[in-house]
Image (cartoon, rainbow, N blue to C red; front, side, top):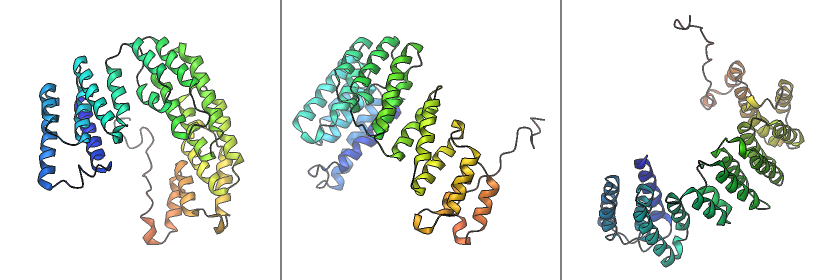
Length: 330
């Protein structure tokens, strides 16, 4: 796990260094200087893997770029279990952030490292002091042993939800509900879900579908959400939108939102659609057959295409039923 964290930080750090616009560090660097930087970075990561954090810090002093330094400091902070070392790299990261306005994004990294050294009570106080929901949702990614702490943070999330959040924020909020299945959290989760659904109604039909489908899949009691999803589909006036929504719902067959009659009606609408509607009839019909696992229809659609277009579509082999052509099962 530690090696994975180090590799991720290496990739992210180097990408930031290369593309964040630090022209003094990147644009003017020679190949020899780049090789030297990469060697120092490699040496640092090797020392971190060996848990030689003080030696890694000493190597960082050879680096000139703030991005390179922040990258190594971050890796040390996430990799070490020593609270004093975490505190030291937090101070170094804060120094970089304060001295370079382009490094403001380091605040989230700093907060994540700080949280690693906190007790559950300290985490709750810290999370409740955070008014930026996007930051809070990225920090609050693990459950507490005592569900009352999770309840306190979820309640804070419910209270600071913006009036008009976007689809990504609402999906992050609903994802935070999966941190614990403790029954004592049922009421606060219900409150959050209700707020998410109400706020999603201000968004486009596409965005609502993108929020409600994963929410319906994650909840045992999802009849209200399924009803909302069906309502969005039925109210879609534009055929292109209706087809897109219908196919998404169809691919989530376990929700049983669209009936066979609904899907047959949608297929007829696609077949009779005028070219001016702007939908790709072949692609739409293929996807509609695909989401219903209708391999024969998929084959018929592809067979009617010009030879050069057939390779654009993949048709899976039928899955044999249990016991069929299976000596072991027999």
